[in-house]
Every structure is written in C-alpha cells, then in structure tokens.
Amino acid sequence: MVLIYHVAVSLDNFIADQGMIDGNINKSLFLFDGDHVPDFLTDIQQYDSVLMGGKTYEFGFQFGAKPGEPGYKGLKHYIFSNSMHFESNDEVELVKGDALEFIENLKQQGSGKIWLCGGGELAGSLLKNKLIDQLVLKVNPIIVGDGIPLFGNVKSVLKLELVDMKQYSNGVIKPTYNIIYD
Image (cartoon, rainbow, N blue to C red; front, top):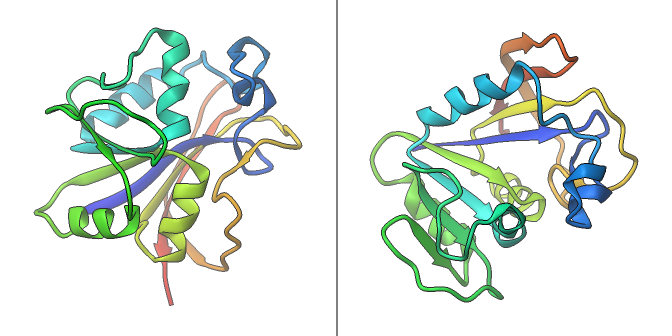
C-alpha cells in the first residue's frame, strides 16, 4: 500500500496554528472555504484508510464527533494514541504502542492508498523511518509563525519529485511530491 501525507500547511510549514491548537477554529488563519474544499472532498475518496494521531482525531470533537466515531465516512480509521480510551470498532481502531510496526505491517497488506491525515509527530516518525511515499500539501497563503510543524521535531533532508501542481483562486496551491529516499 502507498502512504500519502495529505495535509493543509502554512507557507512556514505548520499544519495547525495557535487558533486550532487552542480549539478556536474561528481564530485560525487557515482557509476552510474556497474552491480547494470540493477538490479535497473528492481527493479523499481515493483512500482506503486514514491514519491520525490522537490530537488530530480529538480536533473533530469540537464539531460534535465522539470517541470511536469516524471523522470520514467510508474510510477505515486508525487512531494512534497511548492516552485515549475508547472501544475499537469496524470503522475506528485505536492503536496503542508501536505505531511504526503497526503501519509497516499495514503497508504490506495488499494494494491501495493510506491517507496520513495529520499528526506532525506521527508524520515525523514515519518520515524518519521512510514510510511516507508521497506528500500532497494544501499550501495556504498564510504565515503563522508558530504552531504544529509539518513533521514535528524531525529534521530530515530529502529530495522530492513534483508530480502534480494545482492552484486555486483563493491562493491555495496543491503540490504533490513523491519522496525520494536515499
């Protein structure tokens, strides 16, 4: 299976600004409206499953989601958290312990696409271990200065191959890169 990190990001490489971290989406500078949104909703239909860190999953709670419920209908959810507590079900599986081993095994099962939805620390760990195959970045025309970094605290040096680029009227651009590991 192919693992794709498909995420919104600021120009200074943050996946969440202080408004989102504080749980106040109305204070976020990220663009939640525009012609990139229908494209995103179409794009996520290509995925077979979605991976999220616990904080990313909890972000949906402010919109009425409950623990154990899927954030995206029709996708198998894998939530990586050692601190959350809920019963796994057919749609949402809570994964505690070694996320890397679990994801390595998941990638070896059949074909298809796995969406890494968010979790900068999780993304950094996966990148460090060469498990992310492709980046799809919804680059918002904002600089937030501080927040949750795209790859957490991981500082990698990598080559990327641009395979697609789309620009939207509201200033969002969506480059798609294959990651080239040495």
